Amino acid sequence: MASNSNLSVLNALDNARTQMYHVTAIVIAGMGFFTDAYDLFCISTVSKLLGRLYYYDPTTGKPGKLPHSVNNVVIGVALVGTLSGQLFFGYLGDKLGRKRVYGVTLILMASCAICSGLSFGYSPKVVMGTLCFFRFWLGFGIGGDYPLSATIMSEYANKKTRGAFIAAVFAMQGVGIIFAGLVSMIISRVFLGMYAGPAFSEDHVFSTEPEADYVWRIVLMIGALPALLTFYWRMKMPETGRYTALIEGNAKQAAADMGRVLDIEINAEQEKVAQFNSANEYKLFSNEFFTRHGKHLIGTATTWFLLDIAFYSQNLTQKDIFPVMGLTQEAVNVSALREMFETSRAMFVIALFGTFPGYWFTVAFIEKIGRFYIQLVGFFMMSLFMFIIGVKYEYLKNKDHKWTFAALYGLTFFFANFGPNSTTFVLPAELFPTRVRSTCHALSAASGKAGAMIGAFGIQNFTQDGKSEQIKKAMIILAITNLMGFGFTFMLTETKGRSLEEISGEDAGYGDAQVADQPDH
Image (cartoon, rainbow, N blue to C red):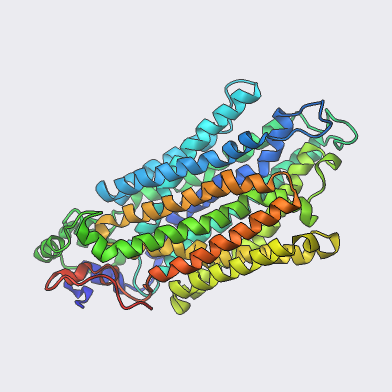
């Protein structure tokens, strides 16, 4: 197969030594992901508080709780927005350029994070209505960040460390989840210090502190900060060399932009670029596309779909499992702010010890072990641990075994992130040609979000009431979906150590257009 030396700008990108410019790109794209994760997951820490504030019914003798349908919509609406945003911005990223669309997603995220803390009115319906409206558009902006961040990072990186760089951008999701727990924990603690109310069992009304209405708003609005901080840097990034050369066909501009950031002299080779492009003119969903990339697209979309059913079910339902583990007290024994503090603390601890290390294990080992095996082993281990939790649930929920339960639960998170949660993000950014890379990543990610919605709207119904039989069912269903993910991983191929054009077969187009599929693994 022809090497990338066909085009010196691509060759320079593939073989550039790792330098400050790569780190900057990781931070700029990573802060987008940090914001995404914070915004998507901080709702879990405040949803119980919202129930107490707006849905208390004195006739039940229990603390207020969001009705199932409202809970599902409040938590799930951002996912619906994310799915739509992925498809919309992913397509635009290929049509208008990565950079042009990249700033828009950030402005949308920041403004909607601020607005989701405001409500126009007092009744529960109005408060939840405005919250859901802005969370949808917040999700829409977040959706755009997925395909664009992945594509920008893969197109900027060199071929030796590309997987680690894309995984590092994605690992900022882990930091965002930790901060969602940490910020909620700090703010609820500060308010507790000033306005602590009695436990619900002592005083039904004042156990819900009136000041708590500020707490959830502050937590949601803080999501705008990291987005605003990186806006300036995002606007200063040049368009990726691959987009400028291979889609706009402007070899001169690509050579100038990349020469500037990589500190080297690059020749502009306009004829070669034109030749290169004429060999790769087939459209998305054409027969040629399906022959070359159909199997991979089905592979990336199905594995991401199956993974997100489990990943989002776990993240969004953990608040229902904490009391069983003994990490939080029963709702009647605590005030509203105390309950939020304990939920946030538990989420922070699980994220710090279970979720977070997995992401960085992927960054460290992805270029050694490769994407394929990390994904395969990750799916298998998740399946195994969830199956054990499902089968042995009665035994584990006994107070004496709470640490065993917490360890098993933490391990499912660890292998999700040192496994398919990271690799399903990396692979679609590498397997497809430049012209459709952003769209194909968006299609795979949107398929993932469809899985997340099944988690949010379907699996959550099993866990919300904390009934053992239902939680057992949920865990066994998730073990099965992970096993299916293990199977579909075999449709994918290893990409480590090869240039993007070699993986996608784009540079085979000079002489004979070879099919992109390499001999697997």
